[in-house]
Image (cartoon, rainbow, N blue to C red; front, side, top):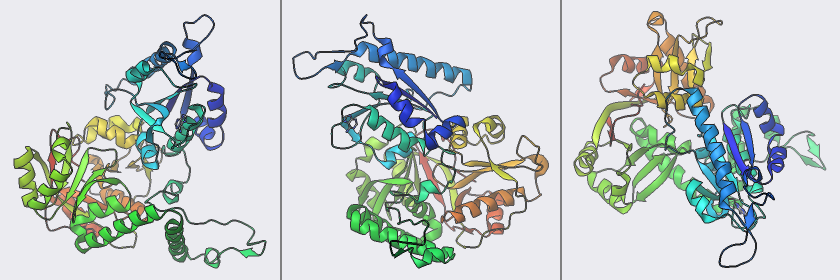
Length: 491
Ligand code: ADE
């Protein structure tokens, strides 16, 4: 991921960001920073970049021209990079996200950090003095973001904070993949207390359970402490967590049918668009996927009316997953959505990990795009590229020296397992079972329930689920969509 920062103090960011974990990620080529000194772009012969505000008032404003020209140089560089890549993919949403850090923006959160970490390039604009000429902001800014309700002397410190929070979520930047999951704000809970040597310090011993070596007990203790700490320090988060857990328990009564909702909620991958009584509309974070939970078309209608869903369907690529036939009919008739796919869910509800015969399974990278896209035409190339960049596709290799995998599997943007493929020459050797078994085990280790969707009528996929011990749901569910499907999110 590449960060471009438009600033009057490039050294400040270089010193702050190129150390420690982020510095090492730069050396490994996972991150890069491009600091642009706005002063280099001024047309003023004395190097001036600020002037008095029209209408009077205290302080100086950063002028439009140097900021705009600095931005144009960055935009040109990004465009040149895109064409060098030559994969013809248009940037989703057209323009590169350009963030103006300002106390007048929406507040920066872990959720926004996760959203921005999906981008390949980000531009930050750091203001100084009393602000920036409004006209250039109108031209270039896509997001106004604040660190909090207080005023700092400039945008450099907030930009550094935001960049740090975003960069550490980029796949590979943190070595231990789990550390981004355990920490504060994941799943609305604050992190548990931690201890290191010595065992006793100033008469205070380390809690005994942590020395026991019993991982189950340690996990239970940590969850208990997280809950206690959240309840005491952040009662607002605690209440949200409790409401979510209550709902998940309710859904668990029909696990096969609602496993997608349970997992979206417990993995904290979706936000609530609206809720009315027992009905709920969720949006899978950073996607155009919506999931509707309503027991009847009447309830669905009330919910959608309440949250102004008519406006929702104006989006070009919207997709919605529904579980009830009458809700499906209501949405297709009322909003003109088309049925894009019929599927069944399958989930693995046991705790034991599966036996994996072919074990040389490794993450694929964007360099594998040609290979994957050529074999998996069910999903759009841009979607596969995004999955590869997110680090959620895995290949199985038959001999260590091979450059291409004999088969692959991935995790869809909604967290379901999918995109399973085995090359013709390697079929009937148990590779599909190995790939899916391996992915099931990976989910189990993270405390998740693995699940997938199979296309209704795909007998081979259904048999594979049964063979691996996944429980297939007896009822169908439907993808409804406004336009063409980007990916069917099937196995
Ligand atoms: N610039 C000055 N104060 C700021 C804040 N609180 N957040 C973001 N940018 C700022």
